[in-house]
Amino acid sequence: MTFKDQIDKSRLPEHVAIIMDGNGRWARRRGQERVFGHHRGVKAVRKVVEAAAELGIEYLTLYAFSTENWNRPDDEVSALMDIMIESLNVETKSLVDQQISLLVIGDLERLSDNVRARLLETMRVTSAGRRLKLIVALSYSSRWEIAEACRRIAVEAREGRISTDQITEDTVSAFLVTSGIPDPAMMIRTSGEKRISNFLLWQLAYAELYFTEKLWPDFGKEDFYKAVADFQKRERRYGKTSEQIAENR
Ligand code: IPE
Ligand code: IPE
Ligand code: MG
Image 1 (cartoon, rainbow, N blue to C red):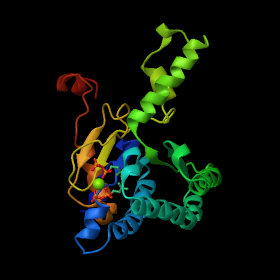
Image 2 (cartoon, rainbow, N blue to C red; image 1 turned 135 degrees about the vertical axis):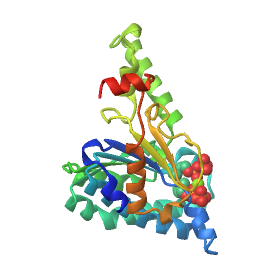
Image 3 (spheres, helix red, strand yellow; image 1 turned 45 degrees about the vertical axis):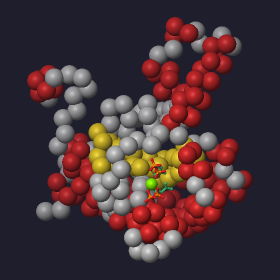
Image 4 (cartoon, protein in one colour; image 1 turned 45 degrees about the horizontal axis):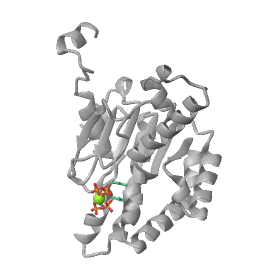
């Protein structure tokens, strides 16, 4: 029996988020430059996006490049940006065919004009895709996002469009870049690192965390199904007791 067969399609996580980590180590272990690993990482992205769409997952968020990743050597950063453009050129048609829409979240101001233009174009041509919403976090960090939301809420308050006692958790959610998107039910991180690295700090409040030793370029469809099957074995209690959860079942 494969992991896919173990999955109950009626209880899928609505939103899965992934920190795609380990490209550099994958390449170095093969005596190659880190960039080689990033190229291979694109193949893993393709497989996992397909797996999520086939399964019927509604939202998939992929952490592709963090705000902190701007501090990497210039040649690695520019190679990653080139890979981004190349992937969008190659994959856009396939996204449209698979009815997958692309949304990019992050500080897009920091991207070069041609990367930004290519992203906006792909978002535009895929916008009708209803099967899977693919969200790519690029030049993204959660603290940047939360600080940005605070600034915008403060402006609303100053201009009298919102009173401070009306500011609730829902208000904060609505001012994040993920506004309107349900919180991830599960977060997967590859490569054995067990940290969040400034990813969706607010939205992951109750996510089930799944860590695997697999390096991102080695992560395939079965690995994704295995993670989803593991998720379905967990009891999500949200602060309640196990007995309360059983009563409401
Ligand atoms: C993840 O792989 C891709 C990005 C962060 C862009 P890494 O490049 O972090 O690979 P490792 O962690 O160094 O192996
Ligand atoms: C996190 O990976 C960001 C992405 C996968 C895009 P990093 O490899 O940059 O994270 P740290 O620095 O090891 O925490
Ligand atoms: Mg890494």
